[in-house]
Length: 554
Image (cartoon, rainbow, N blue to C red; front, side, top):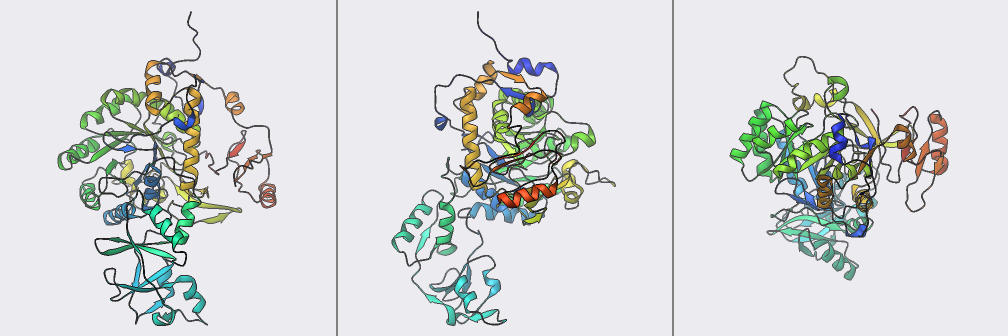
């Protein structure tokens, strides 16, 4: 008699309960492979392959040029938001695609002629000002002015100096950039010629960038990439962008296509509409080679409608984001775990990959989303607050934070995101999101590789040797799940502790019980020199993990 433990997904989701990630847990499987050999490569859409299943959300506090370039360099992809003018969005796409590598500024070099003056403003986006014969990118480089030496030369209230008084003459080495081995070659060159501080990047006779020693030092401090970057046939990073379903978005799409985007995402909180279906048909007719992702959807009926219309991928989720209030305000949506499984069950029959959008707070949530049928996960709060996220840092209650807001918040709607909620023509604006702040997480180039390693170990534990293997196990019933009670969820995390220190990483874990005063928390923070966060839960411990990836409640 065969032993049967737990439930198959098909049996579990017939119970008519709306489950989310924390409600479920996979039962362990059989291990006959190492976690290091678990490939995470997957499809974003029918025709776009990624090395890791990570997509940054098209939110104006999450994805602009630097986030998109960083995600592509890691093997994922970024979707640039549309809460701006069409020309601004197209410029961000161009910038992300041509950013040489994510640790550099990405701004074009500053050029001067030898009889010019150099000012403090010239160093706002660069540490080196190049001096060329004609003061442009195509003429011979004669020398340079370094930021440190310029500021050391200033006296009194002076804000400018003659180029001839501070220029260093040099013979500048140039490299033709590609995303595969240029960084290695530049590093080897600078190691050999130790007196050289930088090299220039050249394309078609134009100097298009500068790579300094400090840029390379930053790159060395990041973990070794676990996957190859997402590079298109043009040799540039692959970048996506979001648009709405209004007539004006057709013109926006033209700008984006000219800018070279690789995939378009139709951004709507409820994607099963005549507006979206009409837009899908328009895009497929006029841009047949462009991959198109539709959504958002949470039911099989919604998914089937958009699949029939011609989408190449689906975005799944409604009201599951940490800053989204759609389920509370509109009483419409679905638990994210159930939504992912249900939509995946119909989409897989048509070869359409799905993106699990929302509800990702920990690496375990990524494992669950992928194990329940998603091909990729889209992340907002998980990436917000990072170095690459838009916005500047500020301090609140002793904690370094960045603003993070829902696209359904009134603040975001005033910039145009109300069209996403079909509310752009309404006299009254109804918020379906909030504005908040998230802790500084550092660079995605540091914490995403660790997160992906944790996902690999999760796959190993429940017996899936690859993402494709996980999907086959799901369909065959080999994947076994159980529902967790509230007590089981508490028991499944670290509990009963005041503080615990993980000495293997720079940041530590802190557990703060409800009832501890903010003053006490601040004292603990200062004495331990660690980050702390206000407690949002009334009963559970708030866990701030090694990457300061906090779980946010509404």
